[in-house]
Image (cartoon, rainbow over all chains, first blue to last red; front, side, top):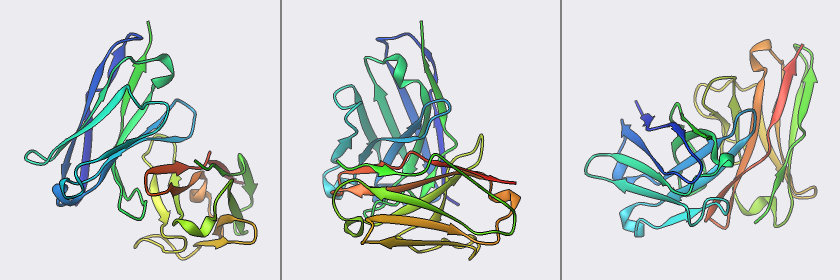
Length: 120
Length: 111
């Protein structure tokens, strides 16, 4: 069974940093493209970014609102995905979901999400 | 980048059929696969349709997906509506294989 378990969410002040983690199990993590999707309270889904597998150079792509401030990392030795978030703004407040995404663009598995609140 | 536009909300009665549209703003809807997700309050999204018209195992055949190049849109049709179908539905596609694009979501009420 595929499991994606996020952690690391919480309250952070504007301008601060936070690192989210996602523990993956039940599939071949090193062969999976991974992504982060967020959802602000009462709003729709917003793609954050994606990291490909090492065979594709572990290249990353980011949505415009987070490019330059967020970094996606992966550790295939521990089946962990990370989202490093710097210079956080109030508009980054959201539930952040870890997910798999295949090469056809299908976000096929989702975690339960972790809430990030950016507020003073 | 393109946008995917969905109606904000729809309502229909149990037993009826409803169709949710998803219109692509630029580029061809047929250029990239379209997926549809269902999200109930407090839960993560789940796939109802992938690759335009494919149903994952466990999704009832009351759910179907299609694309229409003439209107540059995709659609999710739910027939024989049940109260349990009440949820938010999102369409999603790819932008040049670099970025994932979500529609704004449609709140479906079954009453």
